[in-house]
Image (cartoon, rainbow, N blue to C red; front, side, top):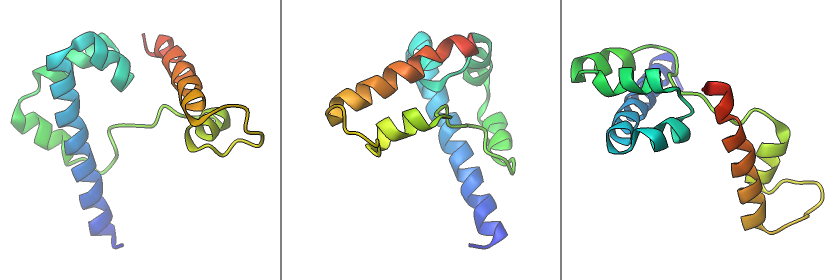
Length: 108
């Protein structure tokens, strides 16, 4: 993959994220804040962006979104790569969701 292709992929990911974020915020702001892992001020800013502003932000050469999964436990639960299989897939996914939901307080 060339550098230009990589930048094009980043821009596309940014545009997709911004459009998704705006739609989620406009439908249900509280749920969007939770799902996106952003605070209410950021949600208000995202919701108020014009199409031109969204395109300008999307054209940046860095990703605007980030993974909130930052520890091995959550990755292991989500990918079922645990050393000891202590539960079902559904239980592991639920456990991972609970751990990530607890991190919303870091944003607020």
